[in-house]
Image 1 (cartoon, one colour):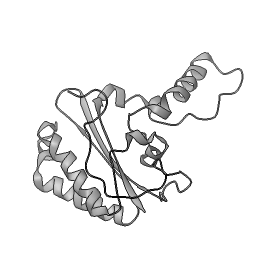
Image 2 (cartoon, rainbow, N blue to C red):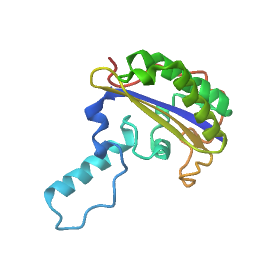
Image 3 (spheres, helix red, strand yellow):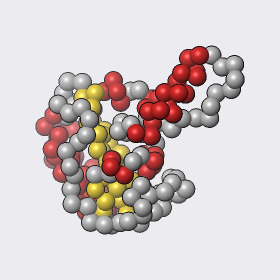
Length: 171
């Protein structure tokens, strides 16, 4: 078992577009209205490469390996990365209570416990202005919520060394 880290920072309105956050359903039946067919086409085209966080945390494993920001064999190491990512943006959290160092430490501790039990962790925060910050740690090989999903990096655990800068719109 190992854990992959994912990070996204972007416009809240992009985050709100469900069509880029869920895998495409089965193709609509013949005779469905044009809007339904268009939404399906958009989901088929956009979802696999979209960097926007998926609605189901385990679905990060369906994304390209380039979106993995780090991989860790130990939950504590993944938690350290999570804490660093939160600390980087905490001064910009929209809610004052969310910025508390004690609260952030509690989030990290809870994440480490969840990862140790084979669970996933997904956190999101509104930042000042119109930005949304999302960070996720996904347990892999296997994922408890979706054991059928393959590891995006070929099943290799390891010692992640931190995170490169976020991709996509960053302000």
